[in-house]
Amino acid sequence: MDTVVFPKNKEKAEQMAAYMKHLFPFAGVSAPERAIVEKELLKVSKKMPFTELFDLVSFYYQKSEREYQYLAIDLATVNVKRFSFEEVLRFKPFVIDKAWWDSVDSWRKFFGLWCFQNLDAMPQLFEAFFGEEDFWHRRIAINLQLLYKEKTNTVLLKKAIIYDKTTDEFFIQKAIGWSLRQYSKTDPLWVQTLFETTELSPLAVREGSKYLPKP
Image (cartoon, rainbow, N blue to C red; front, side):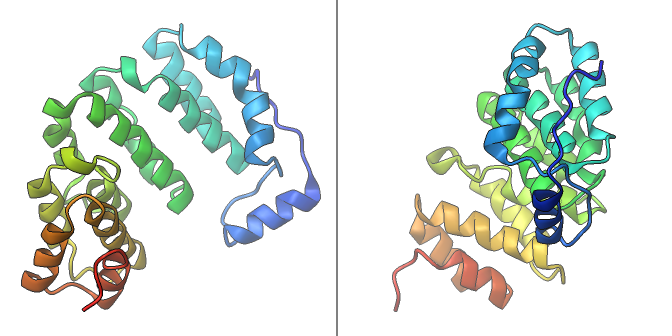
């Protein structure tokens, strides 16, 4: 099963680990280099039955160097369009395993892509993350529709924001600001109205208002 082994670069590994506050060891492989090493396995994975693919994702996710978590997420993401709702939910526990902003935001992209292809089921998947005890899960609920533009379900976006508007957690407040900043490109009036009717943290307001007209 272990068909991908990333070459190690000690100097780069130290730099990458330092950037991630030494939370994880790294092999020292850049994203372009990793893409080359992964390419064949990602191609082969598209023909794997779900059980085999899921086991492969699990296998790589448990390896020590951070690049293997990135590989695992890539394996899930290149196959996302063929998953059922039940299958895509199987990946939820990975979000809070070895969690930091880099992996969580990559999983958000994975779940967001699935929902964009299955908009009717998006509210159901949103609820799987909304209100969860772990704030990383809730960060995904807030940012699930990050690139949906005019297809954004603003009822759910507002619901996620209101739930966590007073949460004293940097990554939650950044997520709120990020979601509002992105949506302000599509509907600045909606975002401005939310600011005027809802008391949000200074961080969320600062991040979310970057593209709004200055008074």
